[in-house]
Image 1: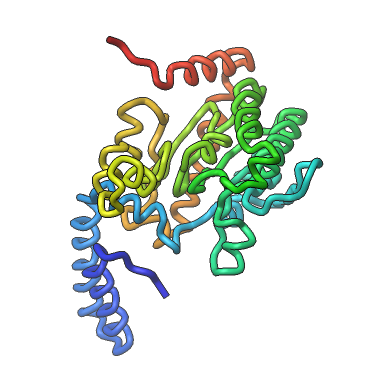
Image 2: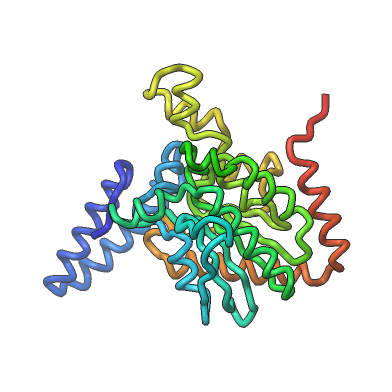
Length: 311
């Protein structure tokens, strides 16, 4: 059963009416209602606020990394463990083929349902997850395999055990190592990109965001709590943080925005997956035209330009 957000209630009503018309085989009514639905979708999703985009990025039905892997990857084989502590289910590593291109996919997985959410730690990786990701990247580099990284996390896990095992060091090491990895790297924010948890698999030649995703140094809830000590200020914090794809593209913090379906990837997962697949293959094709040294030089200048300003 589909989950509708507050601002989607008119869409929910029309879709319910369409199902009723289909049940009695009223084709003329179905045709009219489908036109009404198209207009309502264009109206509703054509003027979304930043907070509404945040709600879509966190939508419970939104496709997660594993959904995309299953939709676009063939002969997928999962890689487990960091060879030091344990396997972290919040980070997925798969090797396989995307459109005939051998690929290493690394993604953050939130999980659905209570048991899965707990198993995946709500998509918040521990240091061993980032070390597993680094192991997968080194393996891909050894065999000249392009890398696709799927960002979707509220942030790295801040628990005591994670800190004891070197959470900050694991993230920093990934930033350092990924910057000089000698294969094409493409990273896409598919949902929620939170803080260092997102940055740890966000260093790439191409960093893109799905239309309804966010990329933030802190959650709007955390920001409103720190600045105003008032949870009702979440909408104001969301707007002030500039965390939506349009704002980040304008400030040159991301390279591209991917046009997932207007009504949201959660309503048409297959189409969203094809958009992601096409972007990855096009990016790898363009990067392969460069020499490795040229690719690394471009990546370096892209990274050092982040946060640059003029007085």
